[in-house]
Amino acid sequence: MRREHHARLPRMCFAPARKPSACLPSALAAVWIAGMLVVLAAVPAGAGSDAFRKETKRTVRAHEKARAHVDRLRAENAGATEVRSAERRRKAIRAGLWDALWSVARDAGDPVAVDPSGRAGRCPAARARARSRAPEGRDAVWTAPIHRYRLSAGYAARGSRWAHRHTGQDFAVPSGTPVYAVGPGTVRATTCGDGFGNQVIVRHPDGYFTQYAHLSRIDVRKGGRVAAGQRLGLAGATGNTTGPHLHFEVRITPYMGSAVSPLPWLRRKSVQVGG
Image (tube, rainbow, N blue to C red):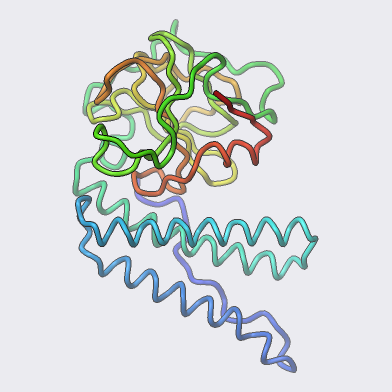
């Protein structure tokens, strides 16, 4: 399944005809977004391409800047038309990023793109006795993905273990430690077999995705709804890892290359994570 978005550019103008200058910001934004997406599509779409990685990083930053702009408008009680216009610009940026990364993930055989249910790869499916239940009254409360932990490798860390900068936050815990959904959402993927080992990806109501990797066991299935604090599985050391831990990521799309710094994202949900 490729898309869960609408790849449309924002309307050029919402201002009355008697104020033509008010059209300029939307028009310039539309031209900028269109140009950026053309460049992203034109860069060789190889997972190992430095040019492609640089362009996706630029697009991720542009999306986060657009998201922050929407948040500011809402906090300032801006007009509904202005908020909708800003939100359309944000979604247009995400749409271009989504399509480019999906294409790369598909060509690379990323299980999130080609086998999100894990069935073709014969991933361990959650059995009835292992499935978790949603905690009572927790849907509106966000939480940390692990309750007792030690923070290890952080977002954007350098090291010999990664070809490039680290894309998530690692929580060092013993194997078998319960791993929880940080917020309400829908399970987008439950996969295995690549460097992330057994992993779960959850889509949240705000459109962001969270990834929980290197699990020893998965307790949910693709398409299932989860609540904040619901157990997704158990931490482990599957995939490429030197020891048991949870690799936690926050992404703009389900695919690698769209990660954002996870701890500030959690703080926006009133979740404090410390080491």
